[in-house]
Image 1: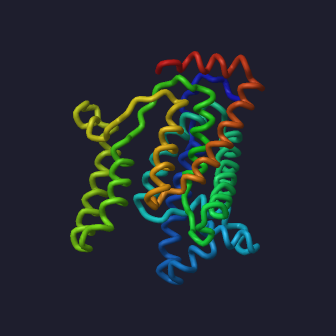
Image 2: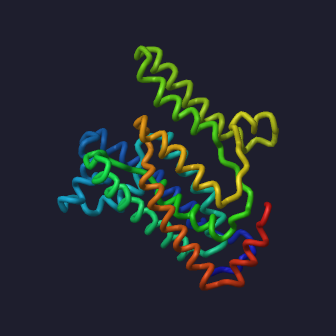
Image 3: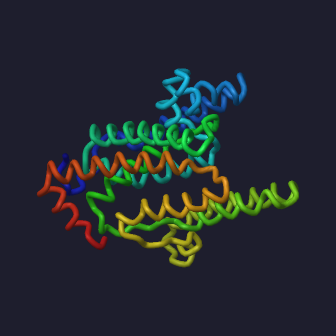
Length: 270
């Protein structure tokens, strides 16, 4: 484990930025594959479909699904989160540990998604995205610096839920226009949180939370809503990734008690 003081910026790209670049490149390649072979080819071969895994087909998809995204907004939201969470954690635990958490959190997230498909139905529903891996990174931070203050951008989550609930009941023309407006507003909210102007930051509906509470708030409400409304969010994969991150975070606290306790004190209340 690295010294818990954040090190100066080193030459070259961080592993986090390299992962973001890889995800963007693979997203562009996926668009090309869809254009040539159709969406079915991409999903059946590279997305995580529980029924495929259970029947021994496309076993590699439990890895490839972590590097695919269903839309530009899906990619943008995940890479935005990965940048801020990843850069921070990578500086704390180092590149090798960071990469192991990322990959294995994605694997466990996929495992939980398959299990949820068996229990609740949906074994034929494909899943893509890096969010399971990102929740693993968040889980490590929630254990190592539990009282650090962080902002949850609640505005986009509220709009996504509102879009899923309201749009199916509207005429297709109105629903299409409203969907475009909601997506524009979501992008505006994400960029607003970076604004130096406090008024614009409030447009994102930022909610300040301790780090330990963030993953709970990010998963539990959407999981409850998901029992009543079908959301385009793989909460089971998020939970699986989070479990891996929490386990590894507690492992680090046990193995490096002085460093991790000092790290927790350093970021208390920040």
